[in-house]
Image (cartoon, rainbow over all chains, first blue to last red; front, side, top):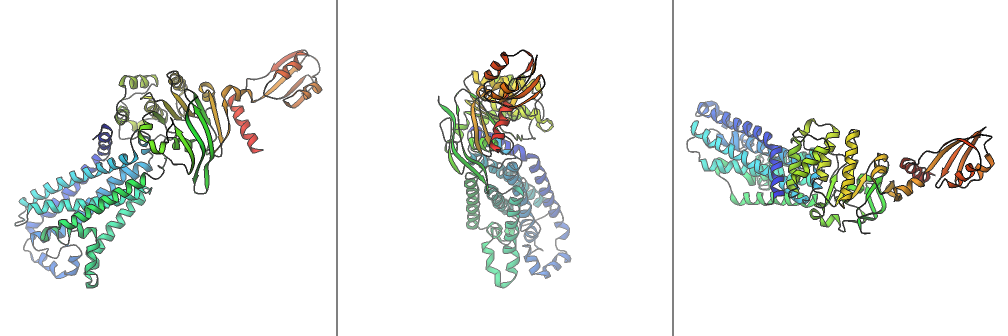
Length: 267
Length: 297
């Protein structure tokens, strides 16, 4: 990596480091709080009563909530962790791309001897590195929490893999925001596009399939590609993760090409 | 002489509005060229096109002999730029900002950067967030000059800067020219342009309305004169002088406007006993305003 690229990545990391720290602390706290409840809920009638709700639980990937794996799916991996990691990734990626362009901070950077594509890709890389770092911290926290709170039979490897699958889903949504920013959309609209993709993907993966008519539509959702229905209980599908990775890279490529073909907004 | 900047028939539209409408001019090597025009004339749009921050809809642009669109980073390595609307990263200190730019440039002479900070009275240890607009502009100026570029593109370099440091900024421009650099300087402060520029380009509504040597432009300016004669003012003679207009006579006092060379007027005055004469030196501002008055007619 050249000095210029290293510097651009370092600046992106510097800009996001405090925010990433708080996101990491918040997400880890959420995981710890939810896993800490498991010993008192395990085997309780209240939890088994939830299972009567059937289709409602399917909407949150919690069909098997009375088991350790099903509880983790429903409380963490099938809804909240993908949402939280996606929110962080969208916020970070758009902050250092379209957000900095809105603020006029990219004007001088683009006037320096470095290509537009490099500027945008290095900023995207900064957000991706922090997404990876926060996900690693969350994965370690979760594995430690499993051993502390009696999640017998849950594979640490599957937890780590599911965490990074959620991070990949976050990366996909950040790439939607990045591509929108690359097209010249201001940060607010870029975030809006990413959130629409997030919500629509969730509805297609978990809500529409509640109706038997739409059971098969979930295969078109990035959520399904990333975590399936119950990532801890059922495991992941490497082929679909590869599809999600490919689509994410395609979005990043499209955003990068788009920014190279337009004017940079002035402050 | 080689043109460092060359624009030919440049058109840039924002929706239905043409910000640049067939703009054409050249900036010769080793000169300081002032780029003048009112707000909205297209000055910043031109500059952004030179830096490839904006893309023209039509026309040809060459900077240091290259197309900014296709040459990109290699070209910008030879250019120092100060934007009109300077937005710094408030999360950094001044020295961190300057070091970051230096690293992206592939390294600069740190002693030169320190000297620039000293000359501009800029404290590099300060946090960028709390800087006044003038001090922010100084950071931008250090960034523009730090790599001793072949071409400096400065948009309003003295805006918001106190008068003492303004003089230093103009000294920096002089020094850059002495070192062989070319400076393209956009400014509303006509006295700055008059003080430092060799040539000016005046634009209006996206087109060049005048260009040339600063002294020629000043000579072409209208000069208002007032003269007091020892006896009655020779009204008929004054009205017949070429290039003298708007003559008014009130007893021994006569006033009017002379355009261009005042020698014919002075020859008439020499034939009469004059007690007092006011003929102020023409300045660039008058010349500048004239172009707009002419264009409005």
